[in-house]
Each structure stands twice: as C-alpha cells, then as structure tokens.
Image (tube, rainbow, N blue to C red; front, side, top):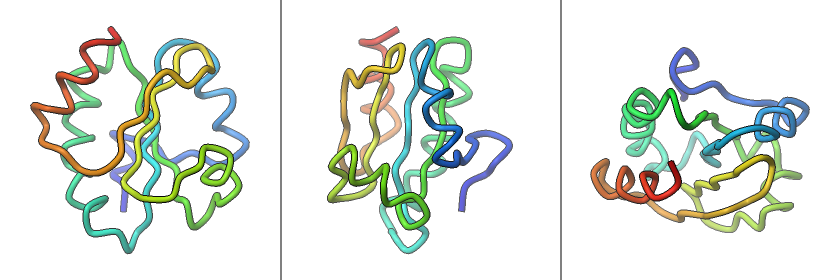
Length: 108
C-alpha cells in the first residue's frame, strides 16, 4: 500500500529506534481500510512538506498487532505523533490535507 520511498513502513523492531529522537508521525493502517487508502497521498504530501521537521512512517496493524494493542488502536486510520519517544498527540480518522497540516504545525 505505502509508497515506501516517501513514507517507510516500519517493523516492530524499527519502531522504537525510529520514534526515539525528534518528532515522528506514525500512520497505523491496514491494506483493506478504504479511509487509510484515501489518506495515503495526503500523508505522502505532508511528509514532503514537513521532511525537515517531522519523520513519517507507517505501521500495518495486521502485521504488528502488538503495537496496535500497545497504543489502543481500535479504529483506523490512526496517527500518533511522538516527540523523543513520548506520545504527544493522536489523530483518529481521515481529514483534509489542510486540516492535518494545521494540526501538525502546532508541534513544529
């Protein structure tokens, strides 16, 4: 699903080191989720706009159920923003690129 060149898909092992430093946005998704598919180009665009300030990555909840459970992911798409390894915000559901960009600007 993901354009791996723009927004990488993480394994469970890569997740902890990825979020450890700086600001990271993790997109929890599933291949069968239509709103997740609709959000993909928006997340790709935002990853370009914020590339100097926010790291973007994806986690497939089907492949990494333990992470979905750890962060209480019960509906998708679900986006969690981390700062230096700590969860600072969570966005649930789809939104426009403009709305999502406004939300992210509060943290950079």
